Image 1 (cartoon, helix red, strand yellow):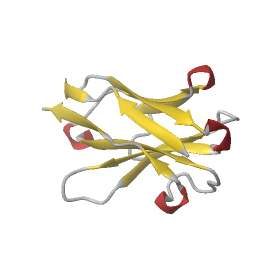
Image 2: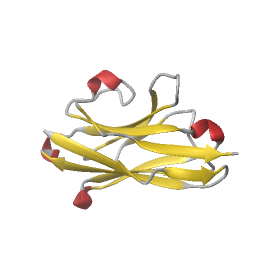
Image 3: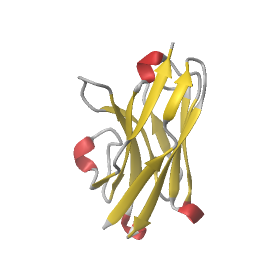
Image 4: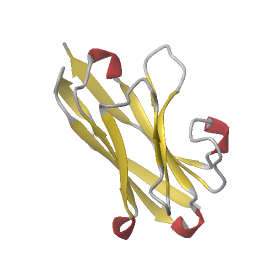
Length: 124
């Protein structure tokens, strides 16, 4: 089992920045990739991007490319989502996920573990 805990969400003005963290514990040796998703009220969960747990290979969705970056610190078993130039439409609950066999970072079904989510609110 892997446990995931997100942190770093909050209220920020448009144009501001936030860094979300996702700390993994438990059987982290089994993780192949980590993903970030978000879900706004009344909308489906949307892929933000992902990172390979061992190679640092990353993917960032087109909708946030150039503003969001994903990184990891294996010593801390933590993955980060750096969000810059935030817009009101980025408002959502952000979730991290871990998968043991991930071929498509944006396929929700390939992730085995999910965090509880952290709220990000961007005011205009």
